[in-house]
Length: 388
Image (cartoon, rainbow, N blue to C red; front, side, top):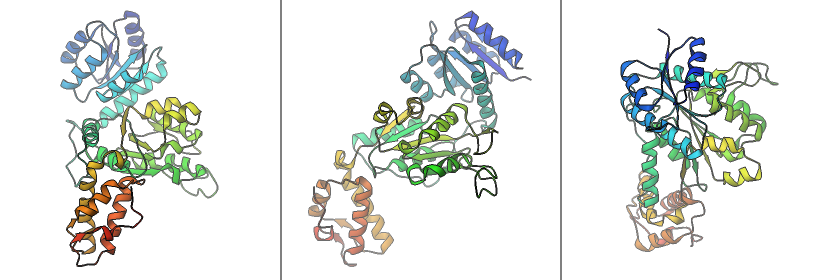
């Protein structure tokens, strides 16, 4: 039986145009003029993809999306609107939309999105279930800001929404990325991390997208890139603000089309990758300066998580310090069991320009350098340069 598409739009002309186009392309097409009719159709017919307008009387496309996904979690839903805004797109992706397209529609683009949605639906397990829990990454903190962040992680982890994590170096951006992966149904698939700033511009394209034999001097065999290596799982692009303009264009295309092309090839390769990006730069300023594409920025920050610096959550320092003390004491066979009030006062009032990473390194050094028989970490065991 042909794959079934349900078109939902209060404009009869739009319904007719899409019905003719997708019928001609070989699909079975059903139509509905409002959300209530669409829900009834979904109860009566097995549908693979829903194309729905956002602005409709009585029930919006977003409301239809949320209600349809409650009863049909496997259903791929694509939203269409002439009034596209970033907040609406963000809400749609958080609610589980497959994609969010703005009118006027380019049928070739729409058809490609539908094909990708159908392919992804066919590859998804039925019923969808999360992977067995393994040992999971822990993010230490009980401050209000951290509690809110961890709640966001739990809400969006098992969605396909792209996540942008911002914050100073050492705040734990990769930890959040790993948590998003581990708490998703992709947890048994690869988690691939790439530091964009650590790879020379001339090599970054090959590193991300791969290359075919002969694409450049020394390319004696085909090489897969990080997108292919992460297929089915999560790709974490750290320091995304440092990628050059050419890579920005190619990355935007991957997010839009969900396919890559290896260097030296014109053959598209479909990829199913959940993208998580991170940066310590202000991307809004970079967009204004013209060094970062605005369309890529909006695609990346469907969900935005900002990690505060350690100096703005000092109430978490005792938790972190004691966690690291126990960890490094066990690893190094030391007798240290606690931190004195005087030493903790120093730790809580230090400036921590390197954030949690600096605190971790400081505790590790103190554990290693303190006398092996010492059970209490004292001020003299801390670096003399440590100050507020």
